[in-house]
Amino acid sequence: MGALQSEAVTASGTLSINGAVHADRILVDGMATMKDAVVCKDSLEVNGRVSIEKNLSADKVKVDGSLKTRGDVQCETLSVHGGFNIEGLLNAGQVDIKLNFPCRAHEIGVERITVKRTKKFRVLEQLTGTFAARLKVNVIEGDFIELEYTDADTVRGNEVRIGPGCQIRLVEYKHEMIQHPDAKIGSIQQI
Image 1 (spheres, rainbow, N blue to C red):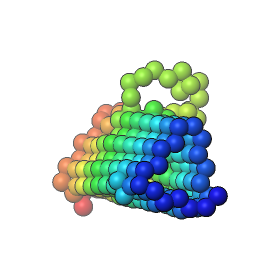
Image 2: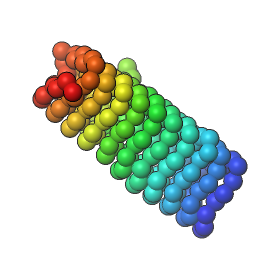
Image 3: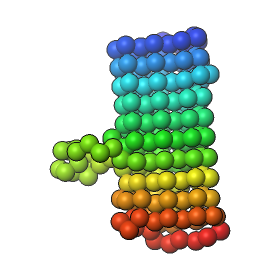
């Protein structure tokens, strides 16, 4: 019912915590709901589904499944093989996303981001766009940005690579810009 402070938290099944969480490591194999802020000194690993009502701060975040936060996510590395919904800012050093499910963030600020779609055939995607494995974000800012299947209002970076399936309103780049023939970009500006 309250807060949890621990060196390691491991959940196999269902976990619900009503207070803040402070731990070195958190491993969730199943479903977890955390109704306050979560701080991990080392790593959060999700094999299933995790929902956080406030901010998440960790050194490493690995998601094989689904992560949802109502606040910001601050981490050094984020590795996603699935989907996420971050209602605030994703601020990370390195982000690697393998799209299996829809991914959403309000804003992303990174040093390096790579977004690729996995090669699996998805029946649900053929039936409706609701389950489309795409990243939707208002703004992405970073040093190196490589995107596939991304819908964004603004992409701003030093080196920018816009791949297949992207729909971007504005791309601003400093050093290099590469556009795939299937990508749709409204406007490109060198800054």
